Amino acid sequence: MAPSFVVRRKRSRSPPGGFDSARCTRPCPMVEMEGKGGVAPSVPDDTLHRKSPWSPQREFDSARCSRTRPMVEMEHAEKSEAERALAPPDGMLHWKRPRSPQRGFDSPRGKRTPPVAEMEQSRKRKAGMAVALPDDMLLEVFRRLPPLRDVVRCAAVCRRWRRLISSADAACLPAPPRHFGFFRNYGPSPLPPFVPTAGVALDIGFLPVPPACGALLIDLRNRRLLLRELGAGHARVLRLLVCSPLEKTFVRVPSLYIAGHRVACCVLVPGEGAAFRVVVVLFGTDPNHFEILVYSSPSSAWEVATGPINRGLVVHPGPSVVIGDVAYKLQIKEKYIMAVDAARLTLSAVPLPDTGMQLYVGNHWIGKTGDGRLCFFAIREQLTLVQWVLEASGKWSQQQPVDLRALMHPALVGDLANMKLSAKMSDQLRGCKLVSFAAFCEGTGTLFFIMADWVVAIDPRTRMLRRLWRNTDQSRPLGDVYPCEMMQWPPALKNPGEAL
Image 1 (cartoon, rainbow, N blue to C red):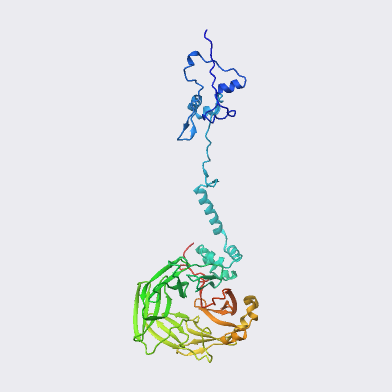
Image 2: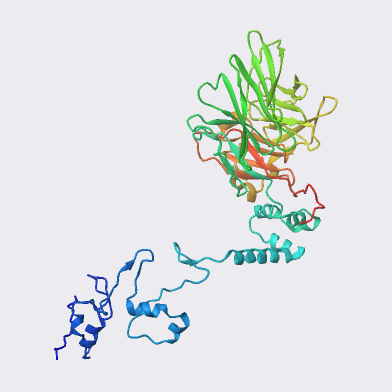
């Protein structure tokens, strides 16, 4: 009888039950059994030159990146899922790939990704809670919002909220600020920076203006800005931009060749909806003449009219006001108000009222009343504000003077209430701080002043002065500011009968 042989395979050391790192195979069970004191089964002689059934045929499947099961595991793989669940293991380890949850995981962040249906149900559930609240509870929520500007944002959520905020029941809500803030021309900045006074920041950095050139703000009306692009050749070519910082939109007006002319007036005239007009008045020499140019956004074209001038006119910067189709521009040193009719393309002059005081830059301004009449303002030396209104007969009528000192409350103006202020320039030699006009907002009827490096506004509702912002750059004194009024308040619906 031929002796029996036992095939012993020499293997590298590996942790019990682990893998051989050199061959990426598991230890043969025979070796494991012998090492534990068991008896290894005998192998017939004719199997010496055959491949042992215990030889692990373990390679890696590149498609699944998992180990191919050996012969015994392949037999188990042929069984059904129910049989494998009930049958005990035959001494071999069966590797089962873990299943991920049905909804899966977000692998980059390790968070579960909720299904789309669940997100939609959550959104509808939250929206239903807001709709289910009665009006009186919604008003109580709106009244407790910390910043006043949040009331404006709530009015833009849906028609029901806007209708509720604009109703008579919303009298308990605090009124939002009348202005977002103001723009100003500042030398170091290529574009006019915005100074927020209501917590809402506006920006015009979206304009396609090269930083090396920059732009100059020349008019602001109805929350739209009119800017003139600077750069090479700006003295010969007039390049204008009209932009809306709230909507982040702009319109580039066709350029005008103005060589040999001086720009005496450049005013933005708002129209219906997004329509607008730009009125430009040029003074020319050789011979003396004027040109009126009106750009209309619906037609995207310029209209031109020209006429002679009997005397030479000096161009000076000054405030402007639009009443209907007529643009008024204050000629400060010429002592008259230029009137340009954008519909009939005519030019005329309105004389100033008899103020009985010396007029110089900063102590007089123009505006308009609530019923659409031209008005003229002046500050006397004792900080007395005087107003004249142009009547239909063409004559000026003086209104009741207002003492600005009486409108200064320490809680609103701080130390300005006790500071020596004067509207007379020579009084600065005696230690007084200068007071001058800064702007007039046509949308709200608010006057802005500059008092000792502070921008101060007088509220036409409360008739009180309030300081807004202080200029800390002493090397660049404050000039004119361009206030941006808040949107219509209370908000109005175009179709109030439409359902939510």
